Amino acid sequence: MSENYVLTAKGLVKRFGRVVALDHADFELKPGEILAVIGDNGAGKSTLIKAISGAIAPDDGEIHLDGQRVQFSSPMAARQAGIETVYQNLALSPALSIADNMFMGREIRVAGPLGSVFKMLDKRKMESFARQKLSELGLMTIQNIRQPIETLSGGQRQGVAVARAAAFGSRVVILDEPTAALGVKESRKVLDLILGLRERGLPVVLISHNMPHVFEVADRIHIHRLGRRAALIKPQDYSMSDAVAIMTGAMAPPEEMAA
Amino acid sequence: MSQSDKSAQTFESGLEGSQSEVAKFDEPARSPLKSLQHALHVNPALIPLIILVLSVAGFGIILGGRFFSPFSLTLILQQVSIVGIVAVAQTLVILTKGIDLSVGAIMVLSSVVMGQFTFRYGLPPEIAILCGFAVGALCGLVNGVLVAIVRLPPFIVTLGMWQIVLASNFLYSRNETIRAQDIESNAPLLQFFGESIRAGGAVLTYGVIAMIVLAALFSYILNNTAWGRHVYAVGDDADAAQLAGVRVKRTLISVYVLSGLICALAGWVLIGRIGSVSPTAGQFTNIESITAVVIGGISLFGGRGSIVGALFGALIVGVFGLGLRLMGTDPQWTFLLIGVLIIGAVALDQWIRRISA
Image 1: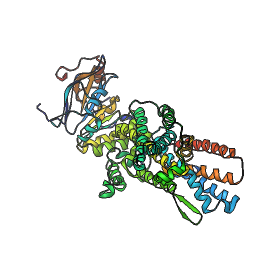
Image 2 (image 1 turned 180 degrees about the vertical axis):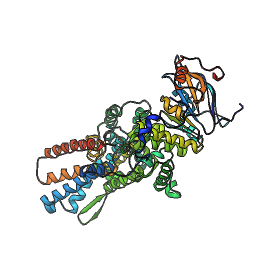
Image 3 (image 1 turned 135 degrees about the horizontal axis):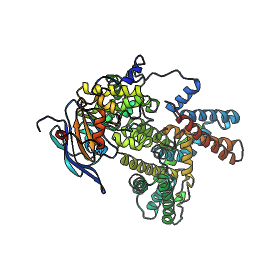
Image 4 (image 1 turned 30 degrees about the vertical axis):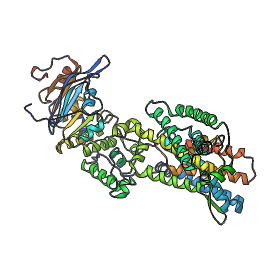
């Protein structure tokens, strides 16, 4: 390996019964880049993402994080290793507050016996942390961090989910179709959030069907086809229609890139 | 089209001059109706509290000192203590989008175990009581495993367990009642919750105090501990909670086990309340606890409501029951009014949930 990668996968295989979802797939993420993952429906890109975010265990193959071999038994394990995923359904609880949601599953307790014996949560600390993280990402004028998620708009919810990932993702942030359910204006805000993550040095994996969005923000594009990486391209070198052609098999992938 | 262009897409030029905040969190001005809806949304125990205060005031005005005396008011507390305790268990389960129809049966079986272990096997009452709690926890564990791991619907699981536990109760007890005098002379500990503190006309049994302490304890746990927040998250959207890192199965099982334990406590309090150990007691406790929870503003769809609300719900039923009895009306009026309250409460819940973003 000549280059330094944050996250790599080699020869990942995953079968569901007789269906081969991942067929010796490779994957590489460089530090501080936005890597887009595109692929047709059923190409296996969600399986790939689930494998590197710990949601499923691959049947074969290796995953390395910062050069160290890792095997995630659950999404929690991947999170503890610093890989945060923003799922398509956002994984937010609508009736609970912004702060509750940001700390779901990793709550902070009050110091001292109140926390250790009575398990009391440090709500003030969690709320101020949530507020700080949201403002860092430019989610402005947060007046009520106790507001339930269901009173927020789609873009705001996405913002909370991205803020949660950015706040805790120390190494990699994975975003699954973050703009799929959003309008033009809200999509723009989310793309700005993604660019903001890169500015802060966090590498981002972006799964999207939206070619204009992918070509705008991605540094490199991983094209997935038939369970494996068909090509790894730079958006400057190819047109959107080329990418779509490679993705659907209408065009042979460039030789030097076919892994 | 210049795909390699890193700038924003051309169709977005129309966004220029539009608002540039990513997310705004200020509260927009609301109409009075909207602000009421919002207040109820934030605090669903508000309506039951208002109904409770109004009904106490109403009966107080109509009946005067007969109703509005320390004796009558504490009598209501005594009458609702069993349902109030079971309603805490029911609240936990309903917050996870479940329902527990077996609460009454578990309560009775636990009380029978406490009594029979003492009298049939001659165990010390302390041990027999612990065995009663163990039986309650075990029933809850069966419910929890069937719901969380086998993934059967809570309604079906607890409907089945209701029958199984109730039948076991009759088979095991051979339908025998242990008389109050025997318990009093041989194992007074079983009647512990029937003892009381008297002040003036007020009579506070230990059972009433247990109900209040239990409700306060679980109110704290639900609001101020991670486990409590997880209970709400699981009921709100279990898949989302799972992805966010909540151990959903563990949370569900712990809720059903706790429900069983609380029902066992209710079984012990029941012995204190009726004096004897009777396998036929508490036949309607499951329905009464669901009634209290629903009137208390806890959503049957999970994730919304509070323990305090359930307690208010139980008290409302108690206030109507005693108030109408003192007025000399046919007791059927009580059931009729409770029916109206249930439907009203669920209609209100639906309205509160219809929140526009």
